[in-house]
Amino acid sequence: MRSSTKENNRQPDAFVLPRYDEIALVLQGGGALGSYQAGVFEGLAEAGVQPNWIAGVSIGALNTAIIAGNAPENRVEALRGFWNSICHPSDWLGGLGAWTLPGLGLPDLARKWASMWAAGRALTEGQPGFFSPRVPLPMAGFGKQIPNAVSYYNTAALKETLLKFADFDRINDGDIRVSVGAVNVQTGNLVYFDNTKMRLQPEHFMASGALPPGFPAVEIDGEYYWDGGLVSNTPLTEVLRDAEHKDALIFQVDLWSARGNAPGDFLDVSERAKDIQYSSRTRAITNMLADRQKHARFIKELLAHVPSDLRRADPLFRLAEEAADGSAINVVHLIYKNKPYEGHYKDYEFSVDTMREHWESGLEDIRDSFAHREWFDVPSREQGFVTHDVHRRLGSVPQSDRDIPELPLGGQQKVAA
Image (tube, rainbow, N blue to C red; front, side, top):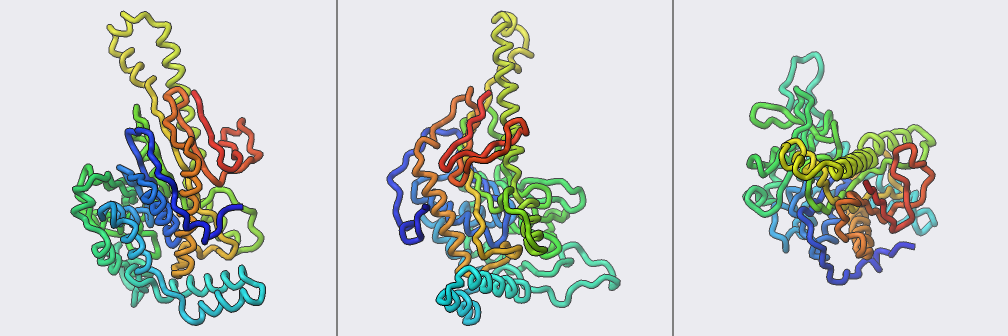
């Protein structure tokens, strides 16, 4: 049995990471579920683990701005302030459902009722400091609008919230690399705004979270951008692209699970479709890495049969030697697990009570991960790539299907060349 919220107040022992060339935090999109990522970061901070690269999409991009835009000692408090500011406190009606019905022995039904009520408020009222209903709505037949005016909600308030909780000079001049993904509306290409290549402004982070048709496109340098999740809801591939010949530790924090139960009604269908659409397809990425490591091993073995003087004389062989020197990548995967009362509206259910539950789940998961100290050892270049996930359990998917099998709780997957 996993620890209760009360037990979750424990503090981890002092933790010292082995030396890595890169420590990256990868934050997926998922709207209101994003407070789970804030809980994960609190656990990283209390263990003294400071990422030197944060990459985010959508709500992950907003969390990225808050983390990178504050001094290390202020980051958790800034995240707490940001999330408290954009979430509705429970009103008397929502609170009545959450606290009275459990006394009748119906806690999940009560929480489901309160969660639906909060999601309904988000749809009709918006969220403070985040988005508000657009009045009047741009209607078809009344002429074309500019792209940043065609949406159900206005996100102008989000800019002020980001400026309140993040210092953009620190984002651009600090010691954390920042990358946030967005989609160019006209080309359809996924691009990453990166503080090593440009100066980032609130609009870059707002563009990463501009999911249509709810939110408007964001204009940057004459181009319009939408939410990066339209193409890829995780920036993991962006981080891996830069991990060649490095020892990299990656904390990948996902808000949607690719695996789930078969739906039983239309609402279940809607929720399951979102899970599949926005999950990060991590297994496909790990298969790609496994192939890359296998090819590197083959090249290394072939080079052993080539005379050393020939290898030195031909630049092609030198390139082959570089390709054979692969990466040592360790991915600690944290995936939000749905609560029984949640439904298809979970990504726009912004009540304070639910936000705190998501936060505690993230904190508990990262603390449980740090309890497995051996997970954080640097893998060898021959081993190449390992993943760890506290939720992983034994599954029945065969290796021949080129999928990564589920392992026992606290297990790890090793992909050797």
